[in-house]
Every structure is written in C-alpha cells, then in structure tokens.
Length: 333
Ligand code: KG4
Ligand code: ZN
Image (tube, rainbow, N blue to C red; front, top):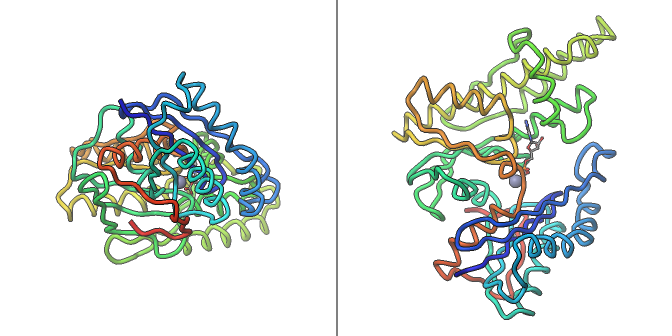
C-alpha cells in the first residue's frame, strides 16, 4: 500500500489531499476571499494566508482520510509554476514534513498536474491524447505521450484564456475572479447578440489581448450612447464574449487533433469548469467522432488531489527530490 500527501499552494488556494494506492480519499481546499476587494490576487497577501491555512488543511485532509501522519509514505508538492511567495509556503512545509517523518519528497509541475487530474476518476484517457489546458495563467495544447512525457504544441502568445475571462469581468464591473460569473450570466444570454473578433494567429497558438481591447472599446462606446447599457444587456454581453473565447479555443483544438491525428481530447485547468466550453467540446466530439474527457468540477480549478495523483505516479517510479529543492515561478515541463 502507498499513501501520498499532496500539497498545492501555487496561487490563492491552499489545498491538501491524500491519495491511497492511486485513489483520492480526501481533498481539502481553503479558498482565499481576501483578494476580492483588490480585483485580483495580491501575492504578498496570498503567501500570508497560505501560512495560516496550510497546517489546518493538512490536518483536515489526514483526518478525512482516516489515517495517521505516520502512515504517509511520501509528500508531493507543487514546485511551480506560480507565485513564488505562495510556492515557498507549500515547498517549505513539504520539506519539513518529509524531514520530520523521514519520508521522500516529490516535486510536481502544476500544469502537468492539471492534466494528470484525468487519472483520478474513470474513464481515464489513453496515451497519446491531447489536452487543452486553460487556467488563469496558461493556455496550452499539450500532446500527452505518457504521465510525464508531455509536449506543448500550441500556447498563448499573450493573455491566458482565464485572464480573458477575468479582464472582461473587470471591464463589466464584476468582482474577481470573474470567469465563474461570466459563465453564470452567459447562461441567461444570447451568444449571437454581439460579434467579437476572432484573431488570425498562425499554427496552433492563441492570442487573447486583441479580444480584450475589442471588448473594452465596445463597452466604452455602448455606455457612452446608453449609460444603462451594461445593466440592460449584461447577460447577452457575457454570452457573446464567452461564445467567442470558446470558439477561439475549440477551433485551435480541433486543428491540433487533425494535425496530430489524435481522437482522444481532454480539457484541464480552471477554465475547463466553464459550461460553454464543456458543452462546446461535447458537441465537437459528436460532430467529429472524438472521445472527450472532462474533469469533475472540483478537479478543474486548483486543488491538491491533482498534485497527490501526480505524486503517486512519481512515487511508483521512485522519482524523488532532495532537501535542496527550491520553488520555481516559471517551470518548463
Ligand atoms: O487553474 P486555476 O484554478 O488557477 C490557475 O492555475 O490559474 O484557474 C483559475 C482561472 C481564473 O481565471 C478563473 O476566472 C477561471 O479559471 N475560471 C473560469 C470558470 N471557473 C474558473 N472561467 C470561466 N468559466 C468558469 N466557470
Ligand atoms: Zn491551476
């Protein structure tokens, strides 16, 4: 039997999870609400709240799994990419936990872990598959050849898809993080009411900064003509923006599938919680005969279950790191 403790602290979620023989038995997530009033994550505040939350989160994860600390065989933690001060809290905690309990330490790449969240539940994708990883900081199409053999075949040249959602929300005077709110209002709106531009970017790369500027100018002009424009049309604006972000993502994803002759497609990362993207991918799969893999909501946004499952596969390979390991704000695959 192998028991892995997973720790996630790369941004503003402090999370701890226990994985027993490849099964997730607990996943505790402490959200930080302090950032809402600032309209975005304040790195210094995030690190301080991680310090307060990490020990209770780990205790709760261990209790919920009905195990004792002494039974844990390894601790896996997010080494990067992310906010350095936030990563330091999880890294230092994990090093101390490993040292105190004389167990190995496992480093995990946060973006790989988002993809490996697909190995938490059935059905699991078969290698090779393509994963569209869409979060607040990244937008990538990844060719996944094996658990830790992944190649980025397309990525954003500027803003991430999550940023496109969050920055649009800011333009619409919605609080941070705006992605889930745009999703909520879009459900009541008409996606064909307004047309926003689709950028023409070569190959499998993305760009979202032009879209953001187009939305900014559109809203400014509409509000000038009618000060109540946003109150009267919020649902339709949200639905139209969401529909464009989803079409940008799925057109490139479809192109990647054709170019790489892959029919198993997965989505991962916070934006994979978006209902428009989930439905769009399901429809695309029906039309093109693709097999699609969509994670449970709780494994889309940041969580330690994905770190624990990635840690479990590294534990099987005895892929450990030493006490000299340091977190990385940028971390290639
Ligand atoms: O993966 P994640 O939790 O954190 C990062 O690693 O960045 O992703 C967070 C991003 C935020 O931009 C948030 O607005 C977006 O995911 N997000 C959504 C939804 N839920 C979270 N975007 C659109 N629709 C949603 N339902
Ligand atoms: Zn993430």
